Amino acid sequence: MHPKLITRSTSNSQVSSENSITLLDEIAREGARRMLVEALHFESKAYIVKFRRERDDEGRALVTGNGKARERSVTLGCGTIRVRAPRVRDEREGEQFTSEILPPYMRKSAKVENLLPILYLKGLSTGDFQSALVGLLGEDTTAGLSPSAIVALKKSWEREYAEWKLRPITERFAYVYADGIHVSVRLGEDRKLCLLVLIGVAESGEKRLLACEAGYRESRDSWAALLSDLVKRGLSAPVLAIGDGALGFWSALRTTDGFQSTREQRCWVHKIANVLNDLPKRIQPVAKSRLHEIMKSVTLSDAVIAKKRFAKEFHEKFPKAVEKLEKDWPELITFFSLPAVHWTHIRTTNAIESTFATVRLRTNVTKGAGSPLAASMMAFKLLQDAERTWNRVRGFEEVKNVLNGFAYKDGVVIADTSSTNRSQPEDPAA
Image (cartoon, rainbow, N blue to C red; front, top):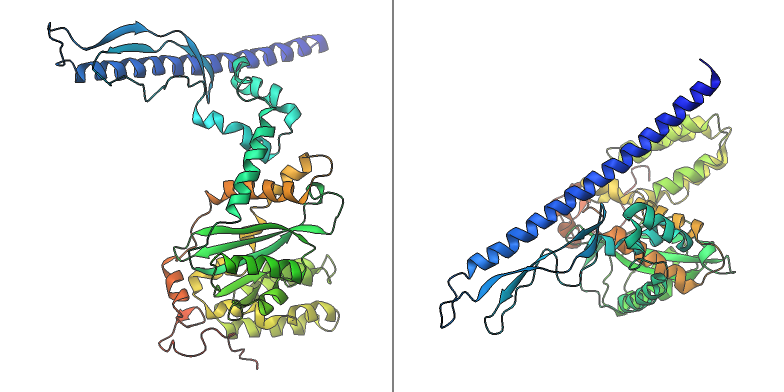
């Protein structure tokens, strides 16, 4: 076939595809408009029928139809439609018909109202709002969802963040996840600043954001100040804290009043990554498999045996990798003394790591130096948004038992709960 014919054919195909998409959008909008009109009609008719027996002294109905209101634009998820809502005359004293479907002065659905902060927080730069919203929802949307609204939104978010940091803490928490997140684009010129984040597992098994604060590096002093503030607001010592071994958090935990009884669990994801860094790439897949075998052992004895196999296999050529595995070993195996159904949740800090992917997305889009307050506030809003989707831990019924001091061995509750249930698990190799 001639090249020009091919080009023309391709072009026609693209035009046809674009026309089909436009037609589909128009059908969706028209369908939404007709359904809304019908729903408003039934709503007003039902109101009139409900009070049809209400009459004045001359026997005339007090509640009647009264034509239609002036046409207005309403922005929905499918775009902007124009509609005339039916009106109802209600002559009863102190009574008035108000549509629950389309209240007076409503111009956009609640989901569309929330679109601007979501787009901003999830990574859309403010300069792109105009074109993005027009393309998505139509020409009539930008008046209420303009990028200039970001300034007012950020002010309200700052107030909300300040109030959130002062709230009293009334729930008990069995587990807390701690991590220091570096988002230097939003923390100004000082690249040693990072966000200190604490997420807790409450007695109900639900995860809660406990703290999100800018700190200096991941220092002990920064973590100590954060923990002391949480204690003042009512946080009692959790049974277990999960975090990376490099954190100043552990030193702060051991020296802050109220947390001495909290046990420590090192994150296996961080530990595995650190061990693999001292191995050649060709060896890493095999080593990673061996490390996962240790982490996923059914019993503590199995984990010790698997660790010995790893040492035997790699120590001669790669002693540093084995040394890194041995470091913090007692804190790596704490989870064996807690319910097995919780192991998948408490071996790593994934609860924080996975959530912060959206924070990094936002900071990658935002250019220029920011401030610790801006970074903390933005991360708070993103985490608060994510908090609504966090699932309860598996086996949440067991969380209460953990808080009540039940003792476990290899993930199974044991009869005697009176003694060392808050100590580290006994290492069979000792």
